[in-house]
Image 1 (cartoon, one colour):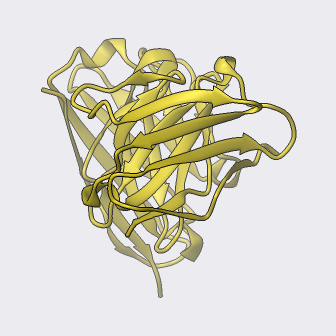
Image 2 (spheres, one colour):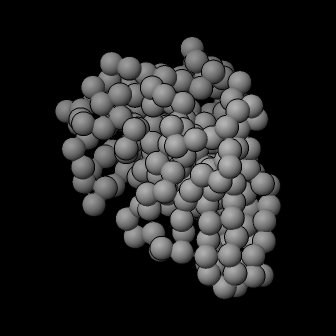
Length: 110
Length: 118
């Protein structure tokens, strides 16, 4: 069974930089996993931030960027703002339209 | 712009059935795969099912196989999720999502709440 791992919680100061990661319980994440990142706030539907590792969705501020760091996918927020406080989920593509979400990272901006 | 509107959620007893619908607009529905994704209270996002653009290929989360059926009507720009033998752990907000590049979910509806309780 594929388990996608994320940090349960992270914090960042306003204006600071934070990196969230997305790994596999066994194996490495690469560009061929086509990692995507979503922002999920309470009472709101998910918002797609990044797809296929580092492509930013329409309307997403350029302070959000995606990459591969070592054997994990990464979402970096540069110049964090108060409104970035939210839950963030990565998803990895498993083929045939199947994707697996990570457990999510709760990001606090303080 | 892309719009996805779910309907059909509600409270249902364990073992009963429910059908969710998703009305799509703002894109050429019959050229994109579609997903259902859910979020149980206090839990993370969980992919549930995917259907290819023409409806031929369908894939499911193991825990819903044999109980849930994803389908679509391209003439009506509509996506469905027929849920049967519902269990309390199926309680969740269910989102329909459009598949984008490589079918990765890109646009999302507002969700439909399903509560399974006696």
